[in-house]
Length: 503
Image (cartoon, rainbow, N blue to C red; front, side, top):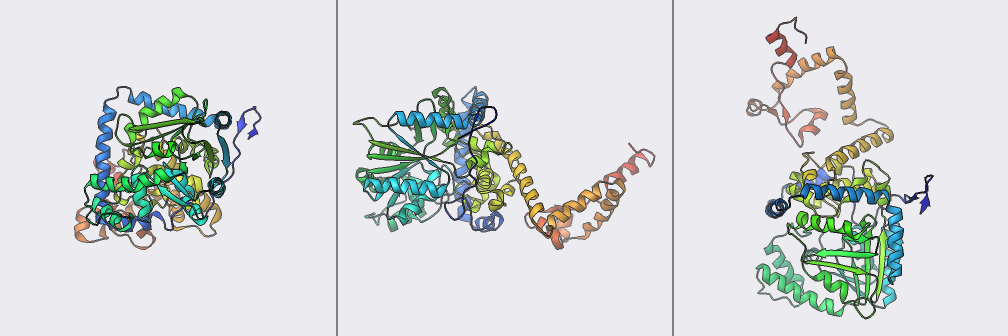
């Protein structure tokens, strides 16, 4: 930590998440990946059914809470205050964890975090780990790093298990296998689960029983567990995991060594603050009044649970996000996924199109900030800016405004680094020149009337242009353009009010 001129502790900015490790960058731009997803009708059916179901459940339980908007405001205020004191609170958390018998490790990026966890597992003398609630470890590519070191990692969340067995990537924050239906999961289990019954049906209870039988042997044999964390309470050094399947409770209590990898933004200052989020999170994520399992642990308790506890505090670009006043609210996210379930773009493309472990609207603002905008430059444009994500966010993150901010940052960076202006930049400069003069603007409007001749007759009659010529084709590649009116507004005004009425 460093100390600022006003005496406050400052978190050093250690740079963006490094390339070549983890799952924050996709191999293709969002528009290219989205085109393939849009052609997959099974995927769109799965997504439409799942997101509609979760949306309905969320709306029902949120309506039960009279002070829901006050809770949202409280969540936003707590997160804002936490970010303002993050260095101080992280130091407090470290002191409390160490005092309770735990050990704290600081990881500047994914490479350091993977090296720390690999060393800790090797030090136990074992070569298998069970995992739970581990988005941060997916972000850094921990499974791949452990595999390179000869250590097997077993996911224990049902959806994470499905993703792992399919050698797949998560496509949703809460429901990582949302892109697969029951028939696909049944086929996957029969093909990959050791000892799976070939007659296994796609009944949800039968599939859950098959997964349970597979995981139970892993739980009983595991000596090391790796977890994420939903929250950490700075005043006591307490970590928290909320989940719905009970696998978290097994991972957090049975193994002798527990390693928790947590992003540095997951802090809350006090227990009273945690109360707010334990009301906001289950309603916003699974549409439940409370989570079936809420596990809390503080350091090590002799004779009860893991006898060695390690907390890995992960930066991996977060300090760079914190340094951006306009974008830092992305760190307020509590990973509920409510924004995904209402997003019209996500519902049609699914999570893989985003190329990051964090898909949907929150991913569109978080991933580019963690990696540097130019490494995920298409994501801030993966939105219609309808604002539905802001309306449901339990901590009131103004995602549309941050998207616009990131688009501006991208345009500014392109302007300073490109030797030749892009077609978009040339078009915008031409529009600014035209619209800055009333006479030029009126002539341009008159000239645009030629566009009424473009396109097929039925499209013209419907008032739209489906394909523009030349560089303008990029605009109509993803949307229709309106057919220019036969009469401009100024012409209509003069015709109806007379040439002398210039108001």
